[in-house]
Length: 463
Image (cartoon, rainbow, N blue to C red; front, top):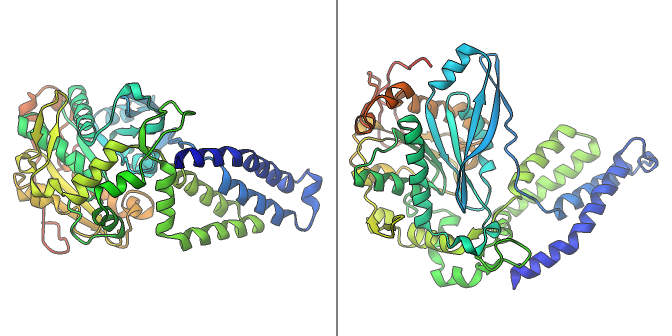
């Protein structure tokens, strides 16, 4: 019922939001008689703020069309490589007429970027993708809004998430010989499960996996987010946050954790900060600071755009990751695409290098939660394991913004380059050999906060 009430309210507010947008333009357009008043800027700013607070935020676009690499402009085409009921595998295909640059692009590493399915769209990783595109062939998981998926497509479980990741990895391996995988926040757990299951079966595993700010072991330095998930019972979540999609959406009748409830939770974590941000936006509009106002719009266009999550997937994530901690305790069984249960055994991973990344000020995934992956992946030799802590970075700072670009990405790029096999070599080498072939050279160990994990550094291949 709550979902229906929310949708009714949103529908009633929509014409008022559109009117506020029109009024804001009337009072700000220099050729409009209404803009000549001394109070015009203030009135326009008020209407603009009303519009921003009342509008419906749809899925943003990546807006990645061109990229400059060493002075050469590269065209980027976004296309769906695999279309699954709950997720698209999207490729960012790069084009150039410059032959030397084209040859370089062809030989660059292939990366599967697994985006979070935890409220926001994959476009939250826009900055991550943009950085990666300079040195890699990039694919990303673009999760769909559950309210747009008809009931005829069936249910979506955490096991399905793990199976999706495995399918995407196999697809890239079939195309390029092998690949690298990066998981940001929530997907660190299912990605580790996917690679573990592939290793246990004897399949070729990715050359490297990079895990950033995720709850591998939520018991370490628990945050407010972790405490909520661990202190409330499974039945509490099922009875209080799960609702059915209203009839005006393709997924009518599907049980979901609605996006608007998730957004309310996001805002409730830092209400003072959001209130100040909107007030500053109002003042920027009055002052005519278009640059600051546009930065505000871009941030909240992304932040306010949320998606519904299928109830089965959400509830199982709460139970497996935060309440039972099945991955850490070695008790997690995943149902594969054939309906057979398989035990997740991270210790079986032997031929995939591991990099974990945490933000010093992360208030979503606390210190040590991601690094715990090293304690589970005992089959990976120490020289193939690395941990990095980004000083001064919060949760979003490890994958977006200045600290991501200046501190984190260079580490990720270097790590992938160290453990890459060129496309040509990969396609002409048996898969069982490719997974184990590593480029080697000496390198001083990388120092981290509590202990040292190191990776050998090769002479980097020229593309």
